[in-house]
Length: 232
Image (cartoon, rainbow, N blue to C red; front, side, top):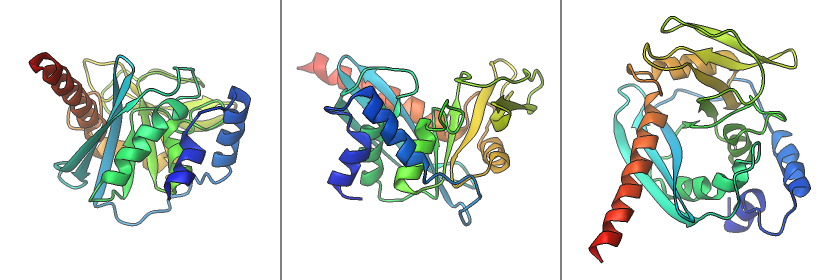
């Protein structure tokens, strides 16, 4: 996808919220919740941190079998859009697309620290990015954006997340000491398989490894930027 196309889908400049909502609807017309991928060899995670008016987007790439990092990249950009619930793709999407294009090892799947179809119009960051870029994606978030579920109390137990009588994901107890996480398909992954993949990526922490390491890497990049400032 060239720069003009990326700007069309991810740059919120000079657009009203109504126009951005229309863009979300257009993106999710492409959405698929079928398992449309081959063997997963490489999986990436993505998370963003903020520093004043800057967004730091980090994307580690992992070997899927051993969950070891084989590559990691980050980008720093100026924040171009305020935080508005359900419009996160226009706050973080451009930075995520930028770091994705820099990867030497293109992942078979991307796991986001945000929502998938568990969004009022199915356009969570994982679904929107996946549909636009046509890559399999999964969303893993910390809070329920929409829908309702029972709360699992035993590690490894998951409960269905239901929104408007549709199963849109899972509430999964991933760690004994932490609140459950929310798992949802983004694009080209089914509801059931999204849970299987996230469970495979758990190593005893609250977050699955792709997003846990992305969170850590974004924090490290932020710390590095601050240290460089202090040395000037």
